Image (cartoon, rainbow, N blue to C red; front, side, top):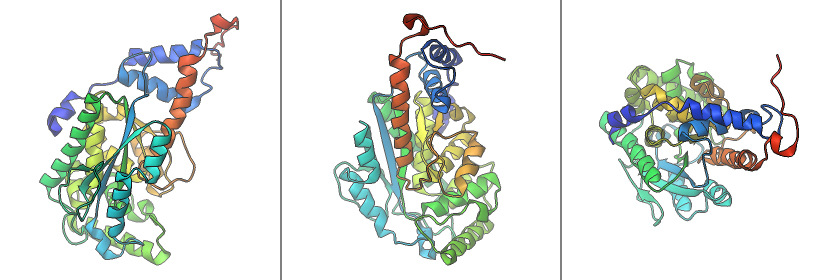
Length: 352
């Protein structure tokens, strides 16, 4: 499907299934609401999958890998060569997210959507839109057409995952400089001050952080992205990894699949997806609260509460995968526990 067809295909989750899931939690032998946000997540997944007994046994993390021309402005501690190296490591299944995913029985799919050089590895999906973006402090990061094509790559991969029987997706990314692009997108969409949403990324000094802030301010002043035009924001100051994630979330929602978000890059993409199609909101689960400054602001903008607050900021999709491991534990109770009437205990009552 193209973007407009995808947006039109997104339905609201089934509230009857959500209510039935909450009733199931009330019936099984545990105190009411005792699993908190994780219990809410199971009910949300039931609503998304439109069944009382959803499964998340077959799941995947899709990692979009791309370079960012803004690295030329000295906004990172390392160079673009790291993107290609880590992408190839993902292709061997040896990156952090791949190893974590493998441990919990999750498949991982690295995608070259814009790495600055050709990468080697049979497991890497080849979807390159261009060899890295332009320097957003001098010109738009990409053309509007390239942004649209990158979004539709994400949509295509979500549709492919659905056709293969995957029941839940996580989005991940790899791209040196992408905390700069995600901060620019966040500032453009929310109107927050650049200083508020910009962090040190992978270890910038105070001087480097100040330079990063100035670069983003320059880009926003130059391009004047309109927050009412998400595609415009994306093509002017975004990244190809963010665009791919945006499409993945849109496509997952259209296919009726829940998606677990990762950190700031993931959440910036999710906010773009929701601005393009508000119904996508019902398909999003927040995996963790990123340590990056924009983390809390983006979660507030998305009206989501995360499962994990652990100071994480690795990216790649690692926080989302960690959150899925918690969901597994809750589903074990949800699916396996006996009801109060089966164990001869009087059920808890909600008191006022």
